[in-house]
Image 1 (cartoon, rainbow over the protein chains, first blue to last red):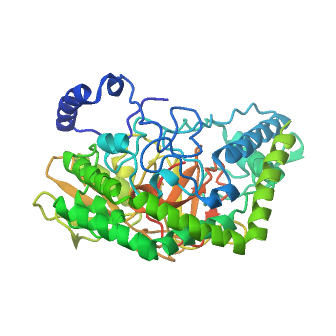
Image 2: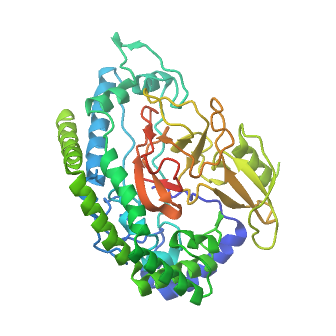
Image 3: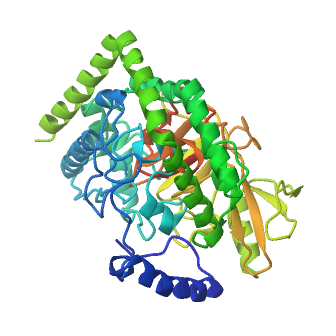
Length: 317
Length: 171
């Protein structure tokens, strides 16, 4: 971690932030006041570096997992394939006489397990995160690894292009007397693991079930109850997905008191109405039906994922 | 050049800037929207401006060979709402709403709002993955977009996220 802050901070903000932090330290306890920004672990994602949990660990979505998750590419699957691609790329670069070290791939604190996005699927669900970050993520202070520094020749062998840009021209060339593969060593490695995984079937179904469940009377009723609860607290809003608009955020400053107030009310009302569990139960019903109707295609996708992971590991050993 | 002007200059790139009455008013001040195709202007990391670790969102789907010449927008890091972002003015004179639109390329989609109008995404170049979300603030169904250091692979948004993209963050 470079510790480079991702957002510019004005002087005024720093003074205010320090004051808030000191006050906050007393309220939130010692754990919240370590020198390095500590992500709220649990519900949303991983502690520094380690993989995200397979299901949210705290909050209103704790322990929930949708049926279609079983057919999706997981964080671990993706990492295994990426590691293999990195190793193959390294070997390929060595063939051309270059020592290439792939940028380190680590989880950021907001990484999630799969496309169902359980911790935030139905909006905010984790009180400890909401109280600190409002609608924002608990990954402040995280920066991506620095870009590798490469010579032009190295870059062409790595990527098959003169620069790493979407419109950079492809370069057809040889190095050490051998033709550089199309897409460079990266392209070759990606091809060797079978290209990008096609998970369109579970993805499409998972997206459709969200809207189907939302339209269900039981979920609609819970949403209306949520909205009524918000109104009692002084907030006029029909849908949880729109609640954040009640307290517009400004880039370059952390969540204002108003945003945290709205987010807390949002969560309180979710708790009171049981909205998350209602929505999850209805959506699980929908997904079980989808699985029945699409069993073959889903099983094939799952088998394809497993095979890709296996062959990626084999190809890189 | 004032800080605000520097931000705005960096952000505008090839987009013609239109001043439009703001749809909502913040802190009692009316502001003209600024139309941009990236969020580089207020990032403290130099990555965005140097085209590193960015996610390129395109108006049209990728062609069969993965290429894409339609208008696009480029974002670094977390974007809680593809509609745009309020940014503090450097001279402490309030906020400006930067509205995200596609631009450049062959002009297909030029000037169209990024939110709910994207068909493809590419972490290009990027050492890390990204995720695109159905709802703002990273809610709803999501799709993992691989970061491609060599800009080799782009991803077509899945059939529901296509034209329903609301937010993104680091994968």
